[in-house]
Length: 124
Image (cartoon, rainbow, N blue to C red; front, side, top):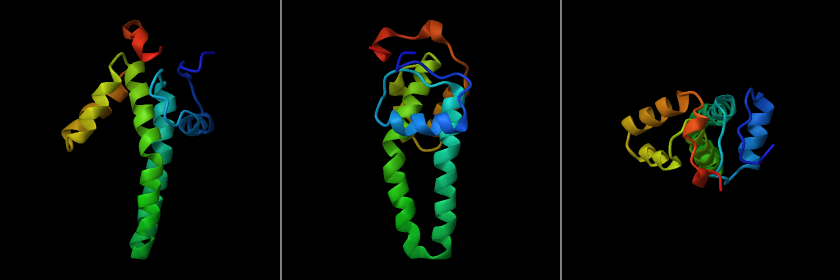
């Protein structure tokens, strides 16, 4: 299997491993299961850290550090998921638009794989 191929029916462990292994790989594609398991992982850890920080405010630094650690791999998996859906990874820039941009990217990430729309430049 090519390193740019998505992994259909990815398990939670595989998704987390690929999330960190492909830390800054913006080329290629990520299957829906790979994306959503990784999303569940980094959002789940983030929620847990926020709950801990609410109990004692100086621990907010843990949440800030976590967000800094996962910002690049989360953007990477979003770009790869967009490629898998047949869209340019540049649409991730929509995340800079409050609420509506997040919603638009979420909808694009929900859409199924459309490999007939893949462009070579996303994988080369």
